[in-house]
Image 1 (tube, rainbow, N blue to C red):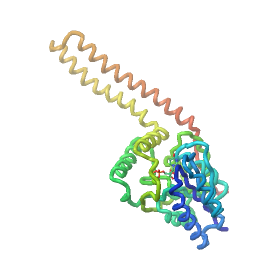
Image 2 (cartoon, rainbow, N blue to C red; image 1 turned 90 degrees about the vertical axis):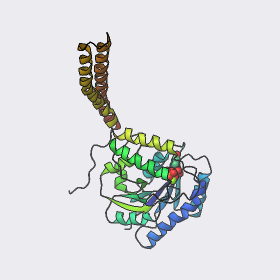
Image 3 (cartoon, protein in one colour; image 1 turned 60 degrees about the horizontal axis):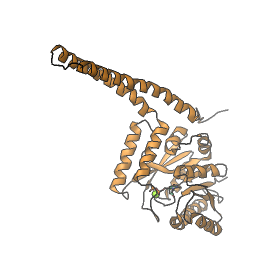
Image 4 (cartoon, rainbow, N blue to C red; image 1 turned 180 degrees about the horizontal axis):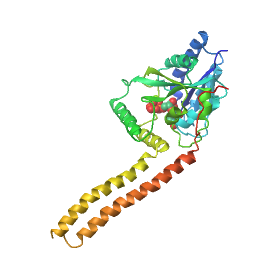
Length: 314
Ligand code: UDP
Ligand code: MG
């Protein structure tokens, strides 16, 4: 039996973009079902993320035109990650695989065809990865690259140049549903799922209409959120800063003692110098030790699944 595919589109104030986006997405579905690769039940789900414009009316209009367009609307604007999760959880039991894509078609929708091919070939997660960032501004390109490097150095593992354009099988979605965390950073969670994956390269275009909802400020916050949701490394670094200061302290102590015995030190200066350096490093190390415990608490409260089964022979 052919597989049912859903395309999940988070939409925040996208009334202008949807009329361009939807025909293209439906076209892709038509093409795939004409080739017999997917079932004609396949559909597109628009998730209205509490938009303030006429996005929902637009979704209703598109649904009237073609019932394969489905919609849900969130009570509040919760942000891209939550809108996406809401959509994925909504379609989880209704399809064999879900593709997530932005409403602005910056990500080339033709890559969906390759993603579906990879899925039919047995892959459970297919990442869309940008072949080039030629259409991004120099600034966006450089800051984005810097974020990836910084995140990796802070212990957050993500797929390079992959945003939230990907296909996930219903099995991968079931595992995703077990991650109950509130600080949602999907790009960090998905690689942890650990099922067979593939990568599909695509070109990034300009937005079809409307404007970006992710200015630098939001991107920065998003990046910090990603790191602090996945890694206790920044906290662990405190201990090592303390340790390094303790080592430097030895040199400082030598310098102070030489000055003291060489009679060039002012009265009171050696004792203050020694205690400031020694106590400073001790305090930092103590905070670092507390950090280790907080790091453990952080992992426990997330209550993430402790293992994901990849295959079974029974
Ligand atoms: N989006 C959303 N909720 C928000 C902000 C954005 O659902 O609060 C959606 C938006 O409609 C789009 C996707 O997330 O489909 C990506 O946003 P955008 O294209 O503005 O980001 P950029 O591509 O500029 O980083
Ligand atoms: Mg965009």
